[in-house]
Length: 503
Image 1 (cartoon, one colour):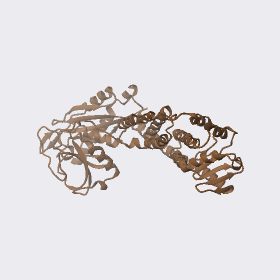
Image 2 (cartoon, rainbow, N blue to C red):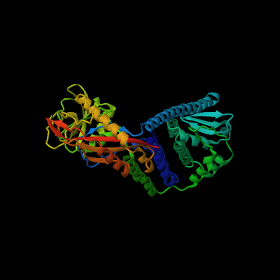
Image 3 (cartoon, rainbow, N blue to C red):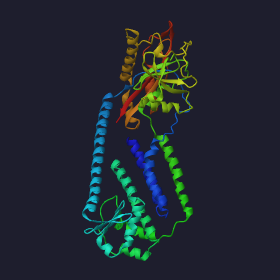
Image 4 (cartoon, one colour):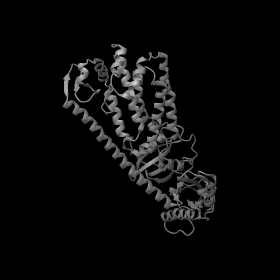
């Protein structure tokens, strides 16, 4: 959520920079109005445009993934508690801000309605004139034009003409649009900048329309004749606003911009392209999807299958005897839809994702080779000297000292390897490596061969020294009783995530 908000703010900064440096001094008022209304919305939408590509080639081999080992669980738990506490506080603050600014908005709206109710209203054909007795101001709100009664006596009709342009072109809707954004993103100062920019643009538009029918000198005099008090309401169009008067006069006297300068609006094309590239490069999937990728990173042969567990439920990689009812996309959970979109949209991957209910009515997320048709079935066949999937092996490797049933032996193997790594890994090594603060992970791949030895250890870590340490610890695991398939000793491959907190 925080990353999304930061991206929205960044994109709005860039859009406003283009407007301030290249567009706001031009007299293309209608185009500028459209720009100021669309770009804040684009900033909200662009982060959701995911043009993600996974790795072009996915090295693959079926592995059993052990549960993540936490080297300093106390620090991770403490950090998680702090983050949850901070997150809860931020959410409360967010909703308190929305409530406060909503109340502020309705107070302003009430003040407008109060002025209508307590002052004389003269109904015209296309608008209503509210004659103010106390406030020396002139402003509009939809088809209500508020003006001091004395101005009517002085026949300051250009003021009414000016406010009538605001009313006809529905400028109030623009301001209310930004009021809604201010409520939703009350903490974002750029919304206020946007509203100020479009408020000034509204004045340019109305001034340009009025001077077509009124002498410029007379119009200047009506603006500068006296100092006026104005209503401090952000979603009304004010005729006399001191901070804008100088800019308005400069724009009135400015010659119309050449049409060739409309090419400046093409600047938005490379800007949008850059934003989309940035989003694609920085858009991170959830930890769960990353964890799935880490398992699939070693798969080379889909003739064998492997079950492993994630929060998404039972997961299967391969094409080994998948019998059941395939679910329609509308039956997927939100998480399954996210996973399916991620994997199925990339033609370069060798596998895609489907969800089915197996023969036992258990929900299974299946990553299958793209060449395998829906509903086809193939049984796993043992190939000599090839690693056997952990889930279907007759007898899994046995850690020294483990006893019990086959399921108990598998659980004991995981527990003992986890305990061994936790006890032997030099967790203090990470302190002097200049790593980023927060949760870091090491991914280790290894094989227990047909003699019970740990072999082919590989590691990926944020620093080479951590990779070397992970390889050292895993390679030092004691010799085990090898796994067996059909009475023969076979090799089994594993993946082991190691997590640690850097403060």
